[in-house]
Structures are given as C-alpha cells and as structure tokens.
Length: 112
Length: 117
Image 1 (cartoon, rainbow over the protein chains, first blue to last red):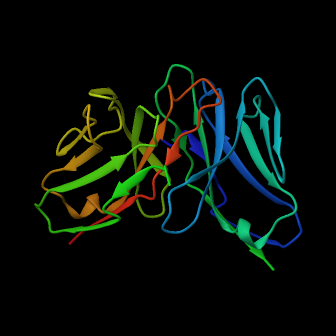
Image 2 (image 1 turned 90 degrees about the vertical axis):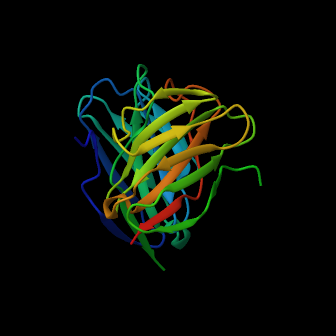
C-alpha cells in the first residue's frame, strides 16, 4: 500500500530552468513532509521540509508547496543546476506514527 | 565526519547464510531506523529503535529478520537464512528525538548493499 506516490520516475530540465517535482499522498493524517535527495551509492540527504500548518517553505533555490486539500506537494528548484541531478524522494509522517513513508523517487537530470 | 555510519558497504551472501548489518548513529542521536530499498522502489520502513528498545517493528518481515540497538555499540540488523529476495540496499537513519512532529529530519547512512547469490 503506497501511501506516498511520485508518479514521474524521471524528469529532464535544462540548466537555469525550473524543476518541478510532484508528490501525492493518500493518508490525511500526515502532517509533516520532507524532500530528500539521493546520489548513486549514497544515502538520502535531507533537503527541505514543511509542516501541515504551512503551505509553502523556501530555502534558497528550493521551495516546497503543500496543498492539503489535494493531498499534493511539490518541490521547485530554481534555477536548476547540473549538480542537482539526483533522485528525489518525498516522505511523510504523522504525529501518532514512528516512521517516514517514502515515495518511489523521481530521477532528475539537469542538462548543461 | 560524525555522520551516520554503516558497514559493510557491500555484503555478499549465499542463500541460507546469515547477514549482519551495522549502523552507528550520529553523535547525540538516540533513535535509529532501518529502511530497505528494493530495486526500482522507494525506501520502505522496517524498524525503529531506541537504546535497548524496539519501538516499532511494523515493517519488519515476521521471520528471519531481527534488529537490536544495545546500550553500547552499533545497531544491528540481522537476517537469517537469507534468500535471493533479500537482495536490496539497507539504509539506516538516526534522529535526535521522536520522528514525527515537525523539524526533526532523519539523517541517513550510505547504506549496505546486500547481494544474495
């Protein structure tokens, strides 16, 4: 039962343009969401998070948007850089739980 | 580097053997999580431990898998009588406090890639 879904397995974007990665979830009890970035042969690295009391959180080139009614979140990277090429996982958790639920990842390629 | 450490990075076992994966959390972190990533899939939660206690093992297979986090030393994920389907990347993460409730991300280790021949 995949409670967090990333329907795009891959995305290619030109350097300097915006990258938009999407994530949907099914559990309305989720109240904390995160994005992780993963390079090959490495563990995921925390990128940015958002609590359900907010609809936007920004950190430098990275912005996460949360639409609770649609159970949808997205990660915007502007401007995209070749070093951003990696697999991006979204994750969610809820107050009564002990785990993060991860999506299947989106592989981003930023073309120089 | 005081990050999460996992060893070995690569482990090859034959069917029926035992696999032991080790995880040392970040300094100051007392919460450890194990995840498994099968090919073409996302990370799937297995177990959450604090020192000497298993808090949540709802993601652990009922047989052959066990985990511990002793008072001293690393957390161990143990897989007995491995089968080919156990081949995966196993990631350990640690956090300072409880996983949920905001502003508390988990820091991941580099993973152990288990291959069962």
